[in-house]
Length: 176
Image 1 (cartoon, rainbow, N blue to C red):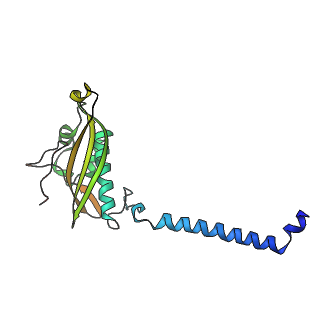
Image 2: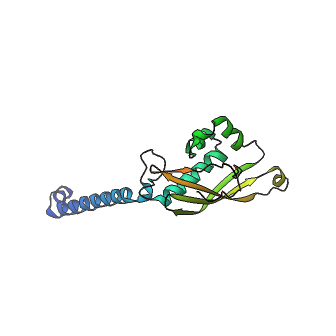
Image 3: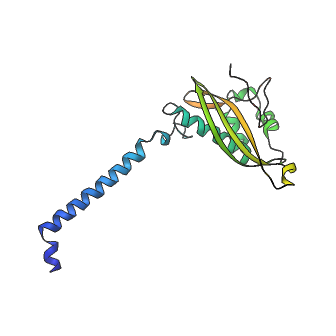
C-alpha cells in the first residue's frame, strides 16, 4: 500500500510543495542576511562600512576602540585607530594611555552617537571598580565622550592634543 502511495500523483504534488516551501525559506533567509546595512563590512574588515551606515560604523568604532584600550589593553590596536598617529611616537602614546592597574574596567556601553558631516561624537558609560570603590564592593559608571573624524571611509579617533587629556572621563573639545 505504501509503495503505491509514493508513486501516486498526490505524493508528487506534496513533495513539490514541500520543496518549494524549503527553497523559498532558504532564499528568504539569505535575502535577510545579505540585505542588512549594519552587517556590511568595510573594506578593512573592521565593523560596518562607514559609507553605507555611518552611525552603525561610528558606534562600532567607538565600542571597539574603548574595549581594546580599557579591557583588552591592546594599545597598539588603539594607536592604529588614532587620527594622525604619526604625530606622536607609540612609546609616548603608551605612557599616556596605559592602564597602570589602578582601575579595573568591567564593561562599557555606547549611549549615543552624533554625526555632523565627517565629524562624530561617541558618548558611552564605562563601568569600573577602583581601589576606593573596591573596599565597599561597589562599581562606578564613568561617562566618556570623545571625538571622531571620517577619513577615507573609516572613522578615526581624535587623540587628545594640546588642551586635551587622554584620561577616561574627560570631554574632548570640539573638532576644528
